[in-house]
Amino acid sequence: MEYGVRATEETCKILAQPFTVYTAFADARGHPDFKRYYAFVQAADGEDLASVLVSRGLARAYGVYRETPDRRHRDDYRAQLADLELQAAKKGLGVWSRTDWEKLPEERQAQRKEEREIELAIGNNKQQQPIGKIHINKASRNQLMQLPGVGEATANAIIGKRPYRKPEDLLEVSGIGKKTLEKLKPFLIFPEG
Image (cartoon, rainbow, N blue to C red; front, side, top):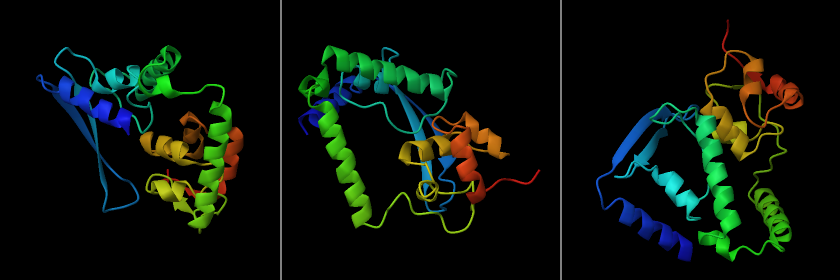
């Protein structure tokens, strides 16, 4: 909570000066009630707000990415934020200053176990197979997460790289290799043509 407050304060300070917001719209593909707006916030000095917060250990590099306003590919932007996060962690900035690196593997294992228990308790077992086939370009994130080998990050990556014309197009998605693709094919519908 303390670092959430610090991130808010830092954001308010940065946005006290003139700033620019670049937006892009995308439908939520698969659910007509949801629409998705992506935004890049550029501070008065030209810095990307997300990059600043990640580099100071006040935000994580996580989510669905889009091409940047300066036309950098979404994968390059994702990699840049991941690199900034790694640097902040190494320097012990922000929330990373509280990380006990010796206990980290044990704590992450406990977190994964807890997440699996919660999924079982609420009936969200990732091993559950989808009912019937789903259209790759229209499926919701939750539908995609029912596919074998697809978790939240991969589902978000699939959505971020739409549209797909043929199964092999999925090999461009981080986290999907040939073996995973073979497991997915029986559950997917692709556009004709």
